[in-house]
Amino acid sequence: MKLQVALDFCKNYQNAKKIIEDIEEYVDIIELGTPLLMECGLDIITKIKRDYPEKTILSDLKIMDAGRYETEEALKAGADIVTIMAVTEKKTIEEGIKVAKEYGRKIMTDLLSVQNIGERIEVLDKMGVDYICLHTSKDLQRDGMNMAASFGKYRSSIKNSGIALAGGISIDNVKSYVELAPDIIIVGEGIVAQKDRREKAKRIKEIMIGR
Image (cartoon, rainbow, N blue to C red):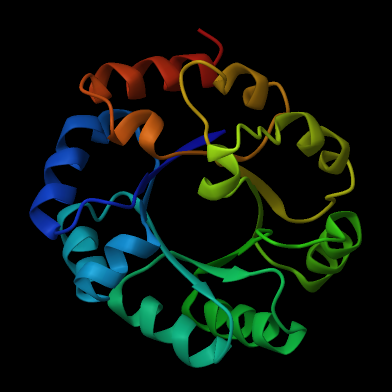
């Protein structure tokens, strides 16, 4: 089980670098989130991969169209994993998968806004995406929603792809997500926005490995 930390509202490379320096010991995957990519462009992927070549770098582009082109641009910049929205056209996802395989990299599909989650998971799993991310959006988090309970009923239907869980995960609830045995747990503000983020990352990682 890997810990992925999402860097979303860092504004710039310097802030992102400082956060990573604080928590790198406990992080397996560094996610360069959509807001950060909007602020800095794809160049930040290159910089962070240069600084942390041993870490897996995920580019959270949330691709909805131009699957091959947009995926390849992130891969050329240095991303190891690129996100494509699961709600988009099948062809878009297929093109992303194809180019990722050419580069020896991976695709994560994000289930945000998918209505027929069970059916879509089966399709994605058969398509050969590397990871399927079950994700509670920031807007739903503000309404107090926690999707951990519903995640459990979909876990067994995923046969081939890895599974990632994301959205509002923190030290207070991470154990409920760990119990679902995902491949990746994604934490954003639950680590990044905390004053004691190093300690939070350490403790979350300990819970994940059963300490």
